[in-house]
Length: 357
Image (cartoon, rainbow, N blue to C red):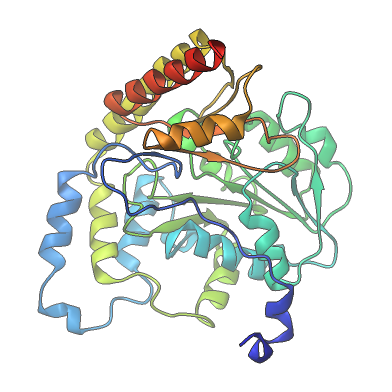
């Protein structure tokens, strides 16, 4: 039926999301989901919102949620934009802010949705290679450009860029939008949201999918100068006026009302990550320092693809990227203690069996 496609569709290379197998007793460490459940307050709020009001449209502006996020970060609600997951927020940002006359800059190893958006919206872009340590060097972003975007911590490497470097980048490109994609910031970094009042060219995006254990609710948001937010709102209201349903709004607001559960889950992931890195080191893996809820690791003697296939045989799935520079690395989501131990036991068995061949 491809003869009915538009000319644009023929040119697209869609994003491939992490696998979601319909298999029981599977240890799933491939999509960076939080191993800990959402706050009880979230579940209660969603339950309470499940009533006859579902026959009505939700608030198209999600004002209650915007105000709650603004209060949480000591900002004004006109500095907040919300959408159906941070992917939708990013999609609107690509259209509203990042599509300029000059190329958009982002790392060569980064979130693989970025070039997909560029293809969809006809955005010229240039990738900037990470350095030999897989880190972003802001000196490499000195050329003229239309805008800049990168995750912090970066994905899939997990490496963090300090706020001092981000601030320098903002100063060096004061007339260009710099978008910091902070999907994983709560697992070991300081948010650039603290800089938005100083830099009108800064947009920060975050998600409730990772640190707040709400991947199934699909809520993301952006923080920035009201002028940037207005650009996003104009695109959003030309696309879908009701991106968040009532259950999502209610649950998201409640997630910001349970700081103890949020901080506890984040700290548990951080602690478990450090334990996993230690075990991986003992097994001979080289792991990039991570500030995310995943690690990026390689084994000097074993092919990454082969390891991933062997793990699958043991009902454990991790993420393998068949791409230049990173095809010998695995991205492993931080699981709970049981899942991480099962992973390490499986890896040890795989390594020992290989060494005996």
